[in-house]
Image 1 (cartoon, rainbow, N blue to C red):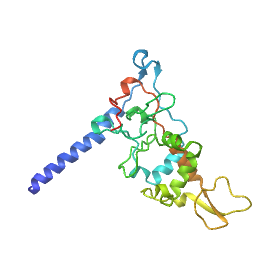
Image 2 (cartoon, rainbow, N blue to C red; image 1 turned 90 degrees about the horizontal axis):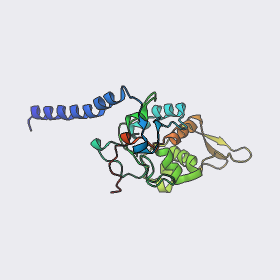
Image 3 (tube, rainbow, N blue to C red; image 1 turned 90 degrees about the vertical axis):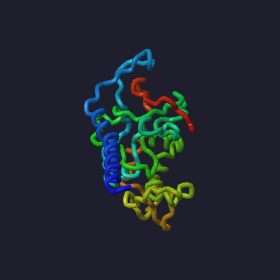
Image 4 (cartoon, rainbow, N blue to C red; image 1 turned 135 degrees about the vertical axis):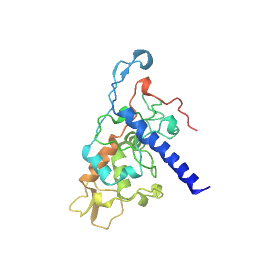
Length: 231
């Protein structure tokens, strides 16, 4: 391949990617009109408002400051960009106890009103669109503690030793135990007489992660997932 041909091919590839990732989302999101439920298609009425349950603004800032978006997306891809629906509980729950299969693709309305939408750059780690619901479903009452130990140092935990998530001990405090150990102390190895507890940034970040739940019912016109296959 000649240099000229290579440059043209590279330009076309970049142009198509830029158009799909930047131009299309921009025109879709710049003027989002309210979308209503219809009784015939949805069995409900009213206007769709994206759920913001438990979103902590400070936690979103910690997420951004530590570059979490570099390795994690918050986008369950639309079918024209690839199929994510087979991935366990990324965009809802495959077996929600109340509504059955709630998995769906991300739509532009999911980010309406957010100061900054952390759609992400790469998937070195899993998508976090629905991490709050996913961790709570798997860990129950221990969801918060599970996330704290993961952020502190996932590689130290036997069943997470292959995690590529970088340790973030700077979000935590090591302190001497005075009296009884703190209820907030992490279940991690530490020298005798000391404990590791989450700092304010760690608490904010975990609250933010637990708020990420994209399994809300949406109007049929916004649910672009034609098939929810497991293969």
